[in-house]
Image (cartoon, rainbow, N blue to C red; front, side, top):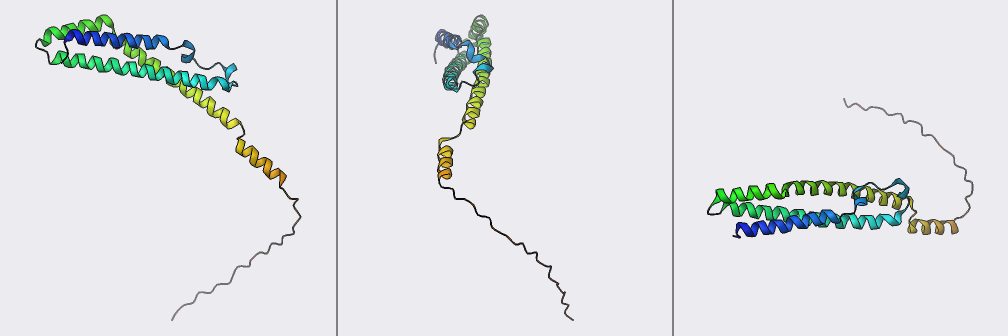
Length: 170
């Protein structure tokens, strides 16, 4: 089991990495796409990749902080002096505000998810609004091979209902 000091140092590193990950996220990724850009699909793929990358970095940093916090708690719980070590843990958590940072990072993650959903929707709308290459080729092929239609006379015969008799056995 690592020492309390080692746990504090590891959690501090993870906390710092979380703060760096949050700071690396460009502000425009957290905002809705400007309606003027809705018709610029070349921007969608770049934005999609940037959001996915930011989310992956942030998720990894959050997971590391949670794992290190849990290791710290486990170490406190199994220490020779749990009361003193618990007090050290509580003081550390209060001073560093690790839990607040995790909550803020999770909130940013939800905002990024909304941005991701928005850009995926715009990509799908753009894709559906474009005629597919296969459909265009197929349409062109059909235009070259169409034959003129001739008029055909069709006679419609109406069936007369059959007179059905019930047969009773006596």
